[in-house]
Image (tube, rainbow, N blue to C red; front, side):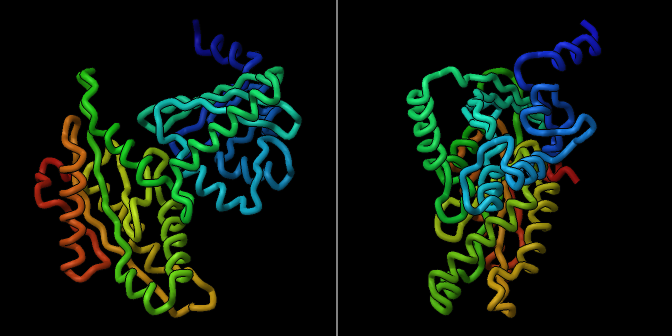
Length: 308
């Protein structure tokens, strides 16, 4: 079958099909998908912009929230973080869809949706309640990004040896807001919560589609960077350091600024999750001891692993 024949079949298929690239920009959508989400024939929008536009116009996916940007950040923090996932969603036109997302290691994603409107409403409601409960268990309530439970499971996935002869590598960064206890003690816990939410939102804007940012407790966060060498991880976290330095979490306290420190360790297939976390945590401790607001690499990283 030729590529042209494949494209023709996808265009005329009854199911809804779309492909997004590594930047989450629409690369292809068949007629059924374009009609459901109101996409022009020659439009190649970012998924976030598509959802934002349709939310304003009350069309496409039903998004039940008063804070769309918060919902979007939370959704993006989980979107594309697993090789495959399936879920149900409803559209403003009354249709109920069963959607699957298949993710490639390079960040490309294929979405396929089928119309399941004929399924009884009470059965749909029961499954939606189940999906909502799973989402809540995987999400940090304050910041909206993945919880410790979710990110630790993804770290285990990164290092798991599945016996397929495919070596997987990547970096783990442990991130900690500097002097957070002082911030809480001086300004109060509500101010501290605002800093935590600002920190999560600022970093999430710089996370790649294949990376996973999560809060593991208090002011500590972790960033999983699959298929990334330490030098590249340093560059990515370095951009985050700069963005946080420029951030002003509360308009009424324009003089307030904060920073964070980071430790980075490199892991390979079959390594122990706890050991990788320990090495990244020790690198974080070194960054704190050297004055904070900086990145330290695990000293066990070899020159051949730097990737520079």
